[in-house]
Image 1 (tube, rainbow, N blue to C red):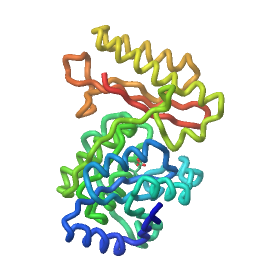
Image 2: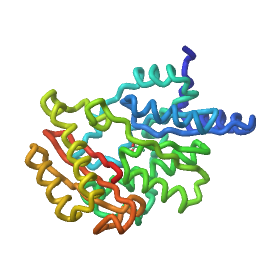
Image 3: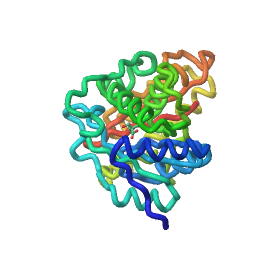
Image 4: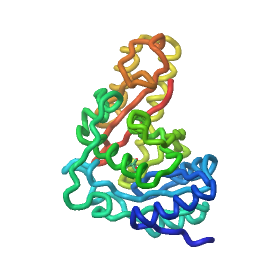
Length: 282
Ligand code: PAF
């Protein structure tokens, strides 16, 4: 297995990317916070379909965590991550320090509207997308990649970053990839490792309830009633529900029936101290 190249500085990454571009090679970036699972590896494989060179960034971005969130305990498994990435032929890992990304005096944030301000994740994590967009904007311009691959698991994030890349003419194409699931339907996530055995067994219920809701909406059941029933089923199953909503799949705006456009179901729920998010198409 070839050893993987690790860039710790923007300058070293850019030097390699410039050489690849000069050789006529496209470059794809897969932004991650590490703790990689099969879902991330699928993003790398997708990136390899678009570009000859693939860089995976591993950076647990402090600006997207609120003070009470899990920044400190977020799993950090760098050696294991590099081994997994090397095994699938990733060209390089960008592994910057916090100081490299946010040097002393750093004072800029990306201000977001549109899909970042629709009352879903943004209602419960009001500063989250500002941090995500700021770091992604930096990663895109730092890497000068042609493509960036994002999973649909973080659906609102995907929409926010896609909008930002277009609005700010960042010159990068955001490529979405469908959520990878465990055999029982649970969406793969780095945070699943926080789940106790009991909570892990319960977690796929969320996906099953969403599937039932999608079927009812497709069958033209009254949307408001179908969503309310699914919300109650989640609470009855033992979750603390932040939201379960049917939204327009592109704008994430409100919908009242299938006639309003393609619908996406989005949810966030807590079990114990773990917060799970998921979404499916109707
Ligand atoms: O989805 C994630 O892992 C993070 O939000 C991202 C896109 C790497 C930005 O830190």
